[in-house]
Image 1 (cartoon, rainbow, N blue to C red):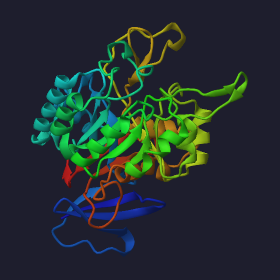
Image 2 (image 1 turned 90 degrees about the vertical axis):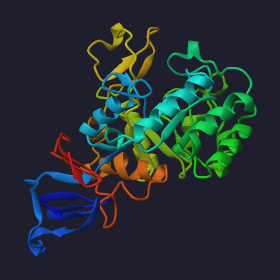
Image 3 (image 1 turned 120 degrees about the vertical axis):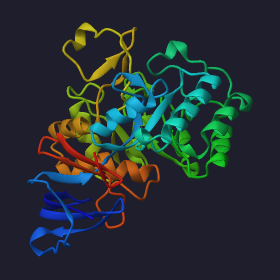
Amino acid sequence: MLAIIHAELVMRDHRIPDAVLFVEDGRIAGYGELRTARIPEGCRILDAGGLFLGPGFVDIHTHAGDGVFFPDDPLRAAQHYLRHGTTTVLPALYFSMDTQGYVGAIETVKAAMRAPEGRNIAGLYMEGPYLNPKFGCDKEHNPWKGPIRREDYQPILDAAGDLAKVWCVAPERENILQFVLDAKRKNPDARFAVAHSEASPQSIEALMPYGLCIGTHHTNATGDRFRYSETRGVCVDEAVNNNPDIYAELICDGRGIHVDPYMLRLVRRIKGEDRIILISDAYAADGPVPEEFAGVTDINFDWSGEIAGSNLTLEVACRNMMRHTGASIVDVFRYASYNPARAVGFRDRGEIAVGKRADLVLVDHLMQVKTILCKGELL
C-alpha cells in the first residue's frame, strides 16, 4: 500500500487540506485528513509537501502529441500526454483520411493500446468522417464531401467497434441518421458530437435521443445563421448552450484565440460546472504563423493560414481557464477530469473516490505537474 501524505486533495466540489490518500492494487483505497488517519505499518510513504492532489486528466479530443500524429507514432504521443498528467487519452482521427486510411489508423492505435507505453490510450474520438466540408483545417483535402454511403463507412465502423467512444457528425448532412444508427448498432454505448457544422438547433436535438451529448470544440468551426439582414439567428453554439444535456468542449489557449476569454466566461455562466470539458485538440500542423498572430506558441496553423488545433496539454489549458475566467482549481479539475470521463462513459476514473482507479496527479498552484500515478503506478 502507498500513502500520499501532506496533500491538498482536490475533490469533485471541495478540497481537503493536509490530507492522506491510500493506494492499493491500482485503486484508491481510502483518504481523509492526515491528523485523524492511521497509516498502516510498512506502508510506503510519498510526501506531497502541500501540493494539490487531483484526478489524472482525461483528454477526450486530441490528434497529436510531441509533434507527431497518433496514427504515425501513437506510443510517442501517448507518453507525451502521460508526462503532462493525462492518464486517459482518446486519440482523435480526422476526416482528412479516406476509408483505408481510417482503418489503418484504427489498427495502429489498437496495437499501441496493447503496449505498456500506451496504457493511457482508452479508445478513439472519431472526428469524422461526415462533417460539413465548409469547416475545419485542411478542408481542401476532405474525401467525404459526397453522399453518405454504407459501403464507404462500414469498414470504419467494423474496425473501430466499441473503441469508438465518440463519433462527430454534422447533423445537416443528408442521410446522417443512417450513419448514426449503424454506428450505434456497432457500439450501443457510443456518444455523438455535433462538429464542423452549421446545423439548426432542431436537427441537433433530433439526434440527442441517439446519444448526441457533446459540442465539439465549442464556438469553433460552427456556422452563423442570420434570419434577416441585421438580426442574429441560432445555430450550433446556441443549441449547445441551451441544452443542459450537451457538454461543451473548450480549447483554452493562452491568448484566448480559439475561444475569447469573454466567451469562456459566458459559456461557464450558461453551462455551469457540470457540462464544460477542457480539451487540447492538439495537432501537428506546421504552417507559418500569420502576422496577426505573431508571438503565439500554443496553437497551430495550416498552410492556408487557418487555425489548426493547438499545442496544449490539459494542465496548461487548466491554468489558462483559471486565468481567463477566475475558475478555481476544483473547477478546472472537474472540467479536465470528472466531466470528460462522465461524458464518454468512464465511471471508474476522473475523481478521487474509494474504489476508483488511482490515476492521480500532483500539481502546484500554477497547475505545473510534479508527480503522476497511472493505475496506481508512480511514474
